[in-house]
Length: 280
Image (cartoon, rainbow, N blue to C red; front, side, top):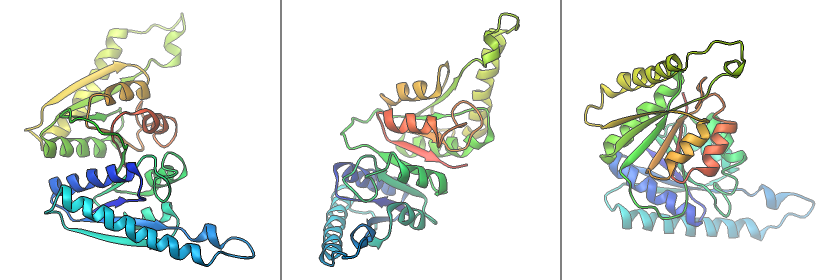
């Protein structure tokens, strides 16, 4: 099952469309979830009794509109809705326990997306085992290409497999990007450093990862892209002309070393396409 979190915002609508299309491609049912957090209105000596009821009514309206959008975009997809009380991060974690994919908008008005680039996204990406797809609200043309960031660790393999599957389902080309930088000691005058050997080693990293994964996806066209650059810069640059950017969550090399830190923040803030974070 695919789970999508909604809050009534424009990015939330984009997330619903994304989830509906992926549910259709993957032949999976879709569950639309809205989180109702009453805690804010229960704080203090005199809680506001009417506001939580208004939140529930608004949540039901948001769910009805999201369900109608799914029926409009993909009428054959099986869809259910659920209003859940709780904080967005915990609701997402609970809902995604058995999910094949979790989809959220990137900048909403409240609920799931309001803090997606802050505490909620960090919480979800760090704890949810399913791939987490972050969708922006602007309309984008289809480019027919998926990008996967890889590094020199085995932890990137689930992300690469997910990217291959997405490329297959979409009939898209897969671009595998490996961004690398010289270690600090390479700039020391007394250190002998063979740049050609470094380049060959980095290319081999990409080839080994791709060859191991592509055996199950012979129909996918793959472009191997090894660049000497900061991983955020390389991935953000690639994001302008693709339909999806896929990164792993706990690699030890260039892309994955700090995915829930500087790299993930950089990619989620600056990528110009939907981003999928896949845990090892």
